[in-house]
Length: 350
Image (spheres, rainbow, N blue to C red):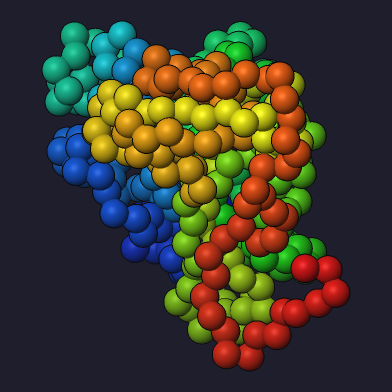
């Protein structure tokens, strides 16, 4: 599988125009502050970009970031501008052709962003075998990945290694492709479908449970969109499965509860995070307005209180009284799906 993916992204694909579907294409509105940064990325790096989302969370200044499957380096270079000269970005990829493009433009981007020296490093390696690289435990504030984990043959190893490398209170913030049901092995074995980031996709609920087993007790969905495939031949083979591009954040906080429990707590956002003066979006279900008392579950309280977000919030309440499950929590499909005229999904367990 590694060799198939290396050939697809190193030899078959020469630019994003060679993709057969829209799975590996970002379809999100860029925040205004990112546009001038991306405009400075070298054209060759941009041409060889195959991501499916945006992986730039808030508060990156001075952070140490690891990009899993960094490809031609687009995200690494954009993040290097955001972390600044006091931060550092490490990209890991297994494809020689992509690494050659990324390494060719280290000094170019340092000059573009006004840095005295590059604050980016690219390493050749497998994202399932990060233990083979000289990367110490608890050494990264943030780990990102853009439409790559679905290509890994051992996704559990990827998440376990990410958990090992994150500092306490750090987070894994990444976009990937997920399916509405488990993909049959016959489709998983198809090199084209796998290379297009479709047949290697995890069933979303398998991903949630896998993340929990790997130490990320409360995965948070940030945003998602349905994928339309836009290729009749491929859709004919795989059209019975829905696919979604989704961004998750996984915090490394020991002792998070497996469900959202209510302790009568709340937070007040100060409006002090750059580019977020009026509100902060923590995830898909937490739109936190500045100055407003915002009730939260115990896990959300800790995600804000024990991470880089702490200084930007006031915290209300304690852990003295448990009021049961937090209202609004559930276990249904978390993504926004397209309406299907022939859909009939009612069942006994709902």
